[in-house]
Length: 255
Image 1 (cartoon, rainbow, N blue to C red):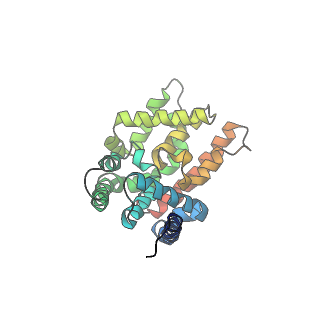
Image 2: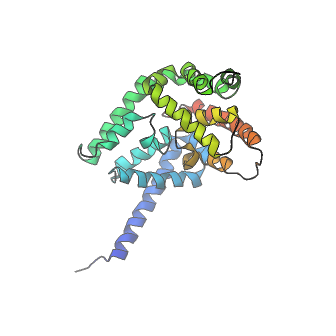
Image 3: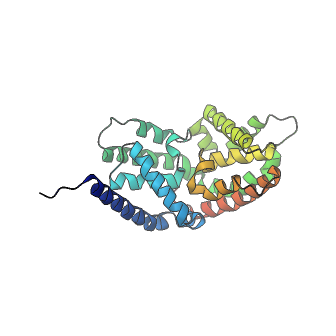
Protein backbone atom coordinates (compact mmCIF):
# COMPACT_ATOMS: atom_id res chain seq x y z
CA UNK A 1 0.00 0.00 0.00
CA UNK A 2 1.25 3.48 -0.87
CA UNK A 3 1.44 5.65 2.23
CA UNK A 4 1.51 9.44 2.06
CA UNK A 5 3.96 10.79 4.57
CA UNK A 6 3.21 13.96 6.52
CA UNK A 7 5.79 15.87 4.51
CA UNK A 8 4.14 14.83 1.24
CA UNK A 9 0.71 15.78 2.53
CA UNK A 10 2.01 19.25 3.42
CA UNK A 11 3.45 19.63 -0.09
CA UNK A 12 0.05 18.73 -1.57
CA UNK A 13 -1.62 21.24 0.75
CA UNK A 14 0.78 24.03 -0.18
CA UNK A 15 0.32 23.30 -3.88
CA UNK A 16 -3.46 23.47 -3.47
CA UNK A 17 -3.19 26.76 -1.57
CA UNK A 18 -0.93 28.24 -4.25
CA UNK A 19 -3.39 27.21 -6.95
CA UNK A 20 -6.27 28.76 -5.01
CA UNK A 21 -4.27 31.95 -4.47
CA UNK A 22 -3.54 32.23 -8.19
CA UNK A 23 -7.22 31.68 -8.98
CA UNK A 24 -8.21 34.38 -6.49
CA UNK A 25 -5.77 36.84 -8.08
CA UNK A 26 -7.52 36.49 -11.43
CA UNK A 27 -10.96 36.60 -9.81
CA UNK A 28 -10.25 39.75 -7.78
CA UNK A 29 -8.88 41.59 -10.79
CA UNK A 30 -12.44 41.34 -12.15
CA UNK A 31 -14.31 41.56 -8.85
CA UNK A 32 -12.62 44.80 -7.71
CA UNK A 33 -10.61 46.13 -10.69
CA UNK A 34 -10.15 49.68 -9.41
CA UNK A 35 -9.13 48.54 -5.95
CA UNK A 36 -6.79 45.92 -7.36
CA UNK A 37 -5.15 48.48 -9.66
CA UNK A 38 -4.43 50.83 -6.75
CA UNK A 39 -3.29 48.02 -4.45
CA UNK A 40 -1.13 45.96 -6.80
CA UNK A 41 -0.53 42.22 -6.90
CA UNK A 42 2.00 42.09 -4.06
CA UNK A 43 -0.41 43.53 -1.50
CA UNK A 44 -3.27 41.67 -3.17
CA UNK A 45 -1.63 38.32 -2.52
CA UNK A 46 -1.03 39.36 1.09
CA UNK A 47 -4.73 40.05 1.46
CA UNK A 48 -5.60 36.66 -0.04
CA UNK A 49 -3.27 34.82 2.34
CA UNK A 50 -4.60 36.80 5.28
CA UNK A 51 -8.12 36.00 4.13
CA UNK A 52 -7.41 32.28 4.06
CA UNK A 53 -6.11 32.47 7.63
CA UNK A 54 -8.96 34.65 8.87
CA UNK A 55 -11.60 32.50 7.20
CA UNK A 56 -10.19 29.36 8.78
CA UNK A 57 -10.49 30.95 12.23
CA UNK A 58 -14.20 31.24 11.56
CA UNK A 59 -14.49 27.66 10.37
CA UNK A 60 -14.42 28.42 6.64
CA UNK A 61 -12.11 26.02 4.82
CA UNK A 62 -14.08 25.09 1.69
CA UNK A 63 -13.30 26.93 -1.52
CA UNK A 64 -16.65 28.72 -1.82
CA UNK A 65 -16.88 30.14 1.73
CA UNK A 66 -13.21 31.17 1.72
CA UNK A 67 -13.60 32.93 -1.61
CA UNK A 68 -16.67 34.77 -0.32
CA UNK A 69 -14.85 35.75 2.88
CA UNK A 70 -12.03 37.31 0.87
CA UNK A 71 -14.57 39.18 -1.27
CA UNK A 72 -16.05 40.63 1.93
CA UNK A 73 -12.58 41.80 2.94
CA UNK A 74 -12.32 43.74 -0.30
CA UNK A 75 -15.74 45.26 0.27
CA UNK A 76 -15.51 46.17 3.97
CA UNK A 77 -11.85 45.94 4.99
CA UNK A 78 -9.70 42.97 5.94
CA UNK A 79 -10.82 43.14 9.57
CA UNK A 80 -14.54 43.55 8.95
CA UNK A 81 -15.18 40.57 11.24
CA UNK A 82 -14.20 42.64 14.31
CA UNK A 83 -15.27 46.07 13.06
CA UNK A 84 -18.09 47.42 15.26
CA UNK A 85 -19.55 49.05 12.15
CA UNK A 86 -20.52 45.61 10.84
CA UNK A 87 -22.50 43.75 13.52
CA UNK A 88 -24.34 41.90 10.76
CA UNK A 89 -21.07 40.08 10.00
CA UNK A 90 -19.75 39.53 13.52
CA UNK A 91 -23.10 38.14 14.68
CA UNK A 92 -23.17 35.45 12.00
CA UNK A 93 -19.47 34.62 12.33
CA UNK A 94 -19.72 34.31 16.12
CA UNK A 95 -22.43 31.65 15.80
CA UNK A 96 -20.14 28.71 15.10
CA UNK A 97 -22.78 26.16 16.11
CA UNK A 98 -25.30 27.15 13.43
CA UNK A 99 -24.46 24.35 11.02
CA UNK A 100 -22.13 23.47 8.18
CA UNK A 101 -19.80 26.18 6.92
CA UNK A 102 -21.69 26.40 3.64
CA UNK A 103 -24.89 27.14 5.58
CA UNK A 104 -23.13 29.79 7.65
CA UNK A 105 -21.67 31.33 4.49
CA UNK A 106 -25.20 31.51 3.04
CA UNK A 107 -26.39 33.27 6.21
CA UNK A 108 -23.49 35.70 5.94
CA UNK A 109 -24.38 36.36 2.31
CA UNK A 110 -28.00 37.07 3.24
CA UNK A 111 -26.91 39.42 6.05
CA UNK A 112 -24.59 41.25 3.66
CA UNK A 113 -27.35 41.76 1.10
CA UNK A 114 -29.69 43.13 3.75
CA UNK A 115 -27.00 45.58 4.88
CA UNK A 116 -26.27 46.67 1.31
CA UNK A 117 -29.95 47.22 0.56
CA UNK A 118 -30.80 49.04 3.78
CA UNK A 119 -27.64 51.06 4.40
CA UNK A 120 -25.11 51.18 1.57
CA UNK A 121 -27.23 51.58 -1.55
CA UNK A 122 -29.36 54.50 -0.26
CA UNK A 123 -26.23 56.51 0.50
CA UNK A 124 -23.91 55.55 -2.34
CA UNK A 125 -24.42 58.68 -4.44
CA UNK A 126 -24.46 60.89 -1.36
CA UNK A 127 -21.14 59.51 -0.19
CA UNK A 128 -19.57 59.95 -3.62
CA UNK A 129 -20.52 63.60 -3.60
CA UNK A 130 -19.39 64.06 0.00
CA UNK A 131 -15.82 62.80 -0.37
CA UNK A 132 -14.42 66.20 -1.36
CA UNK A 133 -15.99 68.20 1.49
CA UNK A 134 -15.42 65.33 3.90
CA UNK A 135 -11.67 65.54 3.48
CA UNK A 136 -11.34 69.17 2.49
CA UNK A 137 -13.81 71.97 3.18
CA UNK A 138 -15.57 70.30 6.08
CA UNK A 139 -12.33 70.11 8.04
CA UNK A 140 -12.94 73.78 8.76
CA UNK A 141 -16.54 73.08 9.68
CA UNK A 142 -15.47 70.46 12.23
CA UNK A 143 -12.47 72.27 13.68
CA UNK A 144 -14.20 75.24 15.29
CA UNK A 145 -12.79 77.24 18.20
CA UNK A 146 -14.43 76.34 21.51
CA UNK A 147 -16.18 73.39 19.88
CA UNK A 148 -15.86 69.85 21.25
CA UNK A 149 -14.03 67.97 18.49
CA UNK A 150 -15.74 64.63 19.12
CA UNK A 151 -19.19 66.20 18.91
CA UNK A 152 -18.18 68.12 15.81
CA UNK A 153 -17.04 64.94 14.06
CA UNK A 154 -20.20 63.14 15.14
CA UNK A 155 -22.30 65.89 13.59
CA UNK A 156 -20.25 65.77 10.38
CA UNK A 157 -20.62 62.00 10.04
CA UNK A 158 -24.38 62.26 10.51
CA UNK A 159 -24.55 64.92 7.79
CA UNK A 160 -22.59 62.78 5.34
CA UNK A 161 -23.93 59.30 6.11
CA UNK A 162 -27.18 59.64 8.10
CA UNK A 163 -28.51 56.16 7.31
CA UNK A 164 -25.25 54.46 8.20
CA UNK A 165 -24.87 56.48 11.40
CA UNK A 166 -28.40 55.59 12.45
CA UNK A 167 -27.68 51.93 11.73
CA UNK A 168 -24.43 51.91 13.71
CA UNK A 169 -25.72 53.99 16.61
CA UNK A 170 -24.10 56.77 18.61
CA UNK A 171 -22.25 54.60 21.17
CA UNK A 172 -20.42 52.75 18.39
CA UNK A 173 -19.72 55.97 16.50
CA UNK A 174 -18.12 57.47 19.60
CA UNK A 175 -16.02 54.31 20.01
CA UNK A 176 -14.84 54.69 16.42
CA UNK A 177 -14.03 58.35 16.98
CA UNK A 178 -11.99 57.53 20.08
CA UNK A 179 -10.25 54.76 18.10
CA UNK A 180 -9.29 57.35 15.47
CA UNK A 181 -8.04 59.72 18.16
CA UNK A 182 -5.90 56.94 19.63
CA UNK A 183 -4.39 56.18 16.21
CA UNK A 184 -3.61 59.87 15.73
CA UNK A 185 -1.82 59.86 19.08
CA UNK A 186 0.09 56.69 18.21
CA UNK A 187 1.40 58.26 14.99
CA UNK A 188 2.24 61.59 16.58
CA UNK A 189 -0.57 63.56 14.92
CA UNK A 190 -1.31 66.19 17.54
CA UNK A 191 -3.38 68.49 15.30
CA UNK A 192 -7.16 68.39 15.06
CA UNK A 193 -6.79 67.84 11.31
CA UNK A 194 -4.78 64.69 12.01
CA UNK A 195 -7.38 63.43 14.47
CA UNK A 196 -10.24 64.11 12.06
CA UNK A 197 -8.40 62.37 9.22
CA UNK A 198 -7.79 59.21 11.25
CA UNK A 199 -11.45 59.10 12.27
CA UNK A 200 -12.58 59.51 8.66
CA UNK A 201 -10.31 56.68 7.51
CA UNK A 202 -11.58 54.51 10.36
CA UNK A 203 -15.16 55.19 9.34
CA UNK A 204 -14.77 54.90 5.56
CA UNK A 205 -11.98 52.33 5.11
CA UNK A 206 -12.42 50.20 8.24
CA UNK A 207 -11.25 50.20 11.84
CA UNK A 208 -8.15 48.12 11.03
CA UNK A 209 -6.97 50.28 8.12
CA UNK A 210 -3.61 51.15 9.70
CA UNK A 211 -2.53 47.48 9.56
CA UNK A 212 -4.52 46.36 6.54
CA UNK A 213 -2.56 45.09 3.49
CA UNK A 214 -5.68 45.92 1.51
CA UNK A 215 -4.63 49.55 1.99
CA UNK A 216 -0.89 49.04 1.95
CA UNK A 217 -0.29 52.54 0.58
CA UNK A 218 -1.81 53.98 3.78
CA UNK A 219 0.28 51.70 5.99
CA UNK A 220 3.47 52.66 4.17
CA UNK A 221 2.76 56.39 4.40
CA UNK A 222 1.91 56.16 8.08
CA UNK A 223 5.22 54.45 8.74
CA UNK A 224 7.35 56.45 6.32
CA UNK A 225 10.33 57.88 8.25
CA UNK A 226 10.96 60.60 5.66
CA UNK A 227 8.22 62.75 7.19
CA UNK A 228 9.75 64.24 10.37
CA UNK A 229 6.97 66.83 10.44
CA UNK A 230 3.67 65.10 11.39
CA UNK A 231 1.65 68.03 10.01
CA UNK A 232 3.14 67.59 6.53
CA UNK A 233 2.52 63.86 6.82
CA UNK A 234 -1.14 64.53 7.63
CA UNK A 235 -1.45 66.90 4.66
CA UNK A 236 -0.05 64.34 2.22
CA UNK A 237 -2.12 61.49 3.65
CA UNK A 238 -5.28 63.61 3.46
CA UNK A 239 -4.56 64.52 -0.16
CA UNK A 240 -3.80 60.94 -1.20
CA UNK A 241 -6.81 59.63 0.74
CA UNK A 242 -9.11 62.00 -1.11
CA UNK A 243 -7.87 60.81 -4.49
CA UNK A 244 -8.08 57.17 -3.39
CA UNK A 245 -11.63 57.40 -2.08
CA UNK A 246 -12.83 59.26 -5.17
CA UNK A 247 -11.18 56.63 -7.37
CA UNK A 248 -12.71 53.68 -5.50
CA UNK A 249 -16.17 55.17 -5.06
CA UNK A 250 -16.29 56.14 -8.73
CA UNK A 251 -16.29 52.46 -9.58
CA UNK A 252 -19.08 51.55 -7.14
CA UNK A 253 -17.37 48.21 -6.72
CA UNK A 254 -19.72 45.84 -4.96
CA UNK A 255 -19.74 47.87 -1.75
